[in-house]
Image 1 (spheres, helix red, strand yellow):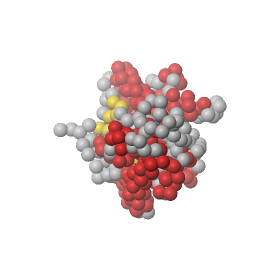
Image 2 (cartoon, rainbow, N blue to C red):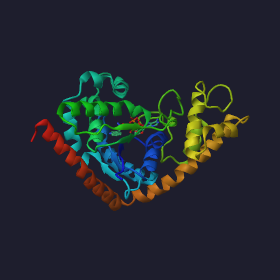
Image 3 (cartoon, rainbow, N blue to C red):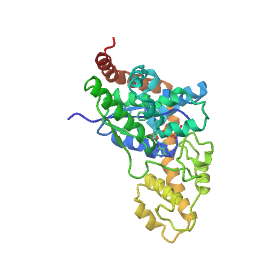
Image 4 (cartoon, rainbow, N blue to C red):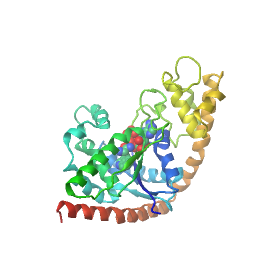
Amino acid sequence: MLQKRVFSGIQPSGNLHIGNYIGAIKQWVAIQQDHDCFFCIVDLHAITVPQDPKILSEKIKELTALYIACGIDPKKSVIFVQSDNLDHPALAWILDCISSMGQLSRMTQYKTKSGKTKGQSSVGLFNYPVLMAADILLYQTDEVPVGEDQKQHVELARDLAEKFNSRFGEIFKVPEVKMFKIGARIMSLRDPSSKMSKSDKDAGGTIDLLDSAKDIVKKIKSATTDSGKEILFRPDKEAISNLLTIYSHFSGTEIKKLEQKYQGKDYKKFKEGLADVVTEGLEPIRKEYRRIRSDETYLSKVLKDGLRKAEEISGKTLEEVYKAVGLG
Ligand code: ATP
Ligand code: LTN
């Protein structure tokens, strides 16, 4: 039986954190066993906001090594760099020409990110969701495993696929979003009302996958808590609910069981337990990362092989698109 196709990606900007791990990569590792997976390093998305060129090229290699260290197996899944495959910007342009300014200006991520730059944000940041739609549609993707913040973008990709198909003929598959029920939106440790984010200026709000054990313990110790002292997953306890979610993902224990385990215990005990499971969970990733990152020949080979496999599929889709639109 033909396996379902999966596509997802992460920007090589900032440091990968446990929100990216829980919301995206953990799903990918599980899904790769019985799906045909494409995991991309979406560097063209990263340059929609200013990047230091030297740091960007280093971050591309870092992210590739981190994908593998987290458990993405290059023998099972295709790993490649977006800017190496020119089919992505080519399809994005065609989709740009059927996208409406109105729909793009309603994208919440654009509103949040452009709001901070007071009118100076790039055109790239504005049509970033169209490039993301091109990434997904080029591979005739069935499922897109992402965190909750990307749901709206996947919905745009669905809309664009349907719009294109109804205008030019059935070319694109219409993709579905895939998210964890709990863990699709990990919040900042400092401010539990805002998402844990790579671009957060306050390093205390995120736990990065490459943080030392000492830093992890320190960050968890100083994480914001709620008033009261019960350890319960409840809407009025957003800080503790967030920490319980992280605990559950790292320990593989249901939240209900964790609530029972910490019944009558204080926040200090709970945070110690959490710090233990997070440090234990990240230690092998950090170790494996160091090993893989030092082998540049291996990393280049993974990306070269990945690119070849990616182009095989994307090239075919783009050819059909050109024909349907009347180009070339
Ligand atoms: P930035 O701050 O630069 O926007 P980010 O931390 O939001 O970065 P992305 O590269 O945009 O990270 O996202 C990579 C993947 O991780 C996406 O699937 C996204 O939905 C998911 N993700 C990002 N932040 C979280 C979070 N806090 N909780 C769960 N998933 C997340
Ligand atoms: N926009 C996403 C990254 C991204 C992506 C994609 C995710 C770019 N292209 C295609 C899934 C599928 C982000 O910033 N998290």
